[in-house]
Image 1 (cartoon, rainbow, N blue to C red):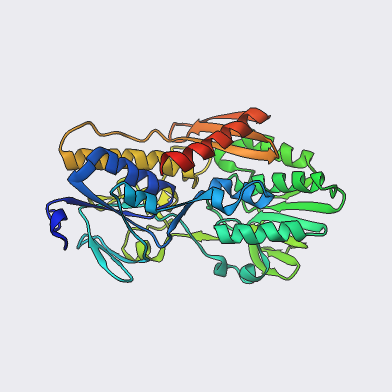
Image 2: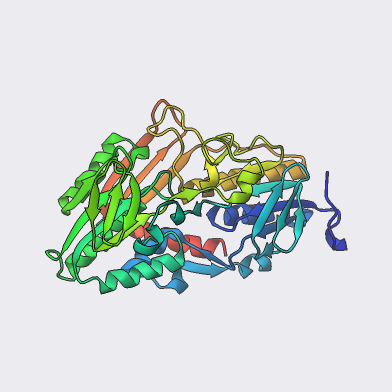
Length: 394
């Protein structure tokens, strides 16, 4: 069924809604517009007016990027003929095939949910008052200021809950901060502590790669705690389930993540707390509704972790597949594609050096993961990747 919204010029067009203008939503809307041109109306809904590139946030904290360099105006999508609605998604009616925002209602023929994960710092008492993080631009800038003012003492870096976006990010932050203070001549003035509820470092990439990450941290004098789940945070103290506590003078902690409320109320979320999808096509159980990226619960076949990690590289690949398949459905011709589970990640370890990890995470019985030791080459590759992203999609 094709909806016929107000606005005569679009009455016969297929209506495609993309919820979210992060990495997945940006890729999906661009690919759809490129493939369908004027044969469909592509609408992106996001409360933000700017696209922001989270992989560059650690560089922002270290002072090698400015806010201007890590964001772009979503007006660029409008210039391509993509409708952009800057509003909050209030409800999703999968039965009536419409989405309501705080000011309007939008019918759809095809829906792509790319809303990512919401942050839930309130789930841990004291988090908002005493912990820093970099999972949005404003928080990254606040942490940057705290890092620059830090006179020395115990700097704790950790993870409060799993799953969370970009599994390598807290490890990268710990390594970059150690390098930052060493370059400032404060190597003997800062004690580094790392904690995580995970059973091993970056468990999604397997024990061999995890051991290499752990060795990188130990070689920098970063003390490490496994299976430490935060229960509450007080001024100067992180407390863990089981009664242990860690004193700190400056704290970076990954906040709890959860699916947006509107997706749960729409019945899209299952017992995992996220949206289950077909691993190869990203279809949900609802016809004509897809989900990509961090909002999904995507099982891995006997992998190192039961569900695929939340990472922008996966959102990118999934969005390309979904956009292609929706375009095939709209045009009534062409061959559908399947996502191959490929993913890659840079792990910055110092100013000018990065490690590199890649693999196919839907392969069984174990994903084939490659680890490339830290080198300037991989750092330069990450710089080129950032430049490509901030130019190509805008």
